[in-house]
Amino acid sequence: MAADHILVRPATPADAAALVAVLHDTFESTWRPNISAEAARAFLAEARAASYVAESGAAFWVAEIAGEVVGLVHWQDDFVHALHVRSTEARRGVGARLMDRAEAGMAVAGFAVARLETDTFNEDSQAFYRARGYREAGRYPDEMWDSGLTTVLLVKALEPTPISD
Image (cartoon, rainbow, N blue to C red; front, side, top):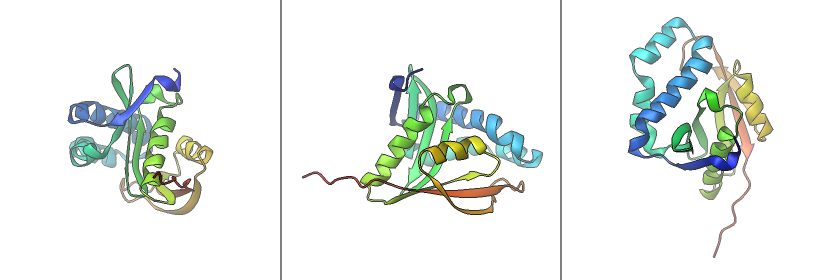
């Protein structure tokens, strides 16, 4: 699939179910194998994906292929809170297109650096971000999952956006 078939656009309320589905897909494919059974049960029982979409979904940007939402990115100020791509679309340019949008949005807003977190077990994620110019800036306990994981803080200098007259 060529990256030019990927539409990146702001999320709409009609995307809510698709966004929850993307979050559940990445939970199953990436997180569940690496967190405790108790943490997995809590994620599902507390409907964390649906809560996140309800609370922050209006700020998401989505990637769409052939009318279907296949990924999302959420950033605020200089921090990327989430980048999720459906596992069936991994390594097809979806994440790159979403991060291009997030980084451009941060640069236009005047931020000189983009920041984000991933976990040490997620080597694919770390490789993706390193290839985009991110560098490790710190490590600390991952308190979100209460599973003994270690979070990696990554940072990247952004290209200044020229101000047009």
